[in-house]
Amino acid sequence: MPHSPSRIVQSAILITLLAVTSGNAQSASPIQPPNPTELRVIYSTGFEDADWLSDWNDVGHRQNMQCVDSSDRSDVPSPSGDGRSTGKVLQVTVAKDGHYGCAPQLMFQRHLGSLPDEVYASYDVCFADNFSGYGGKAPGWSGIESVGWGGKPSDGINGWSARGGIHTNDDGTLGLSYYTYHARMRGKYGDSFRWTGPAAAIKTGRWYHIDQYCKINTPGRPDGVLRAWVDGELVLDKTDVQMRNTNQLGLKSYWLNYYYGGKGVSAHERHVYLDNLTLMTPKR
Image 1 (cartoon, rainbow, N blue to C red):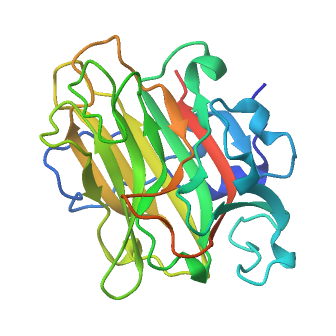
Image 2: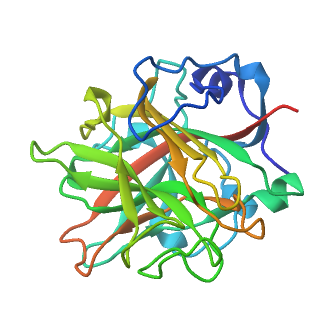
């Protein structure tokens, strides 16, 4: 059964209703968040329960995921204040000379009984100082079947994905994106739709609140939507994504993925911390 959302988590959710615009860039006027009561929570966890992974599929690399008390960690502040919990957080470790991370998926068919057209995600994140220099994957969306990841390009029929991406900026801050395999991609690897603006320059050692939104496109039409906010600031509003060319593909899962990308491996151990993860759909 989905976890019940706490009042604290709900009060921390910064989301927005769909407002269809054209073009690739961020909207000139920021999209305002709606009343959270207009959304249906389908899953929520504060990582307090040791069995939180029982709700997820494709669970590997369990040794890299630990629910820890942030007060016991020297590399992360306690996520107190601003609606954040003071209990346990999820620590994800990318090992030295490794790629993973983690990669469980929350399957929407399992939790809703069908595939939704649109989903919101909300979570708090803190990158430890040792995360500097990272380049790779982060949580995001999936419609994966046989391809749509790992250098297996999508043609809109065989799969798609829009995981989060992380790169390191010239000033040492971390930049975020959607690393997207879609029906109009031209190369072997996914396209990076980068989040922009001052709020998108992420510093290590502090907590941020991330909101994400995905609306699947009409088959064969470039009208899919990917949005993102950091601490309530809109950093991406992309409304022309063509994920699929057939209704046999859908918005299948939320992919909780941290993966050090490319041919190289992580030069040292890295930690990222998550809390208050919530998945939501509009009420009908």
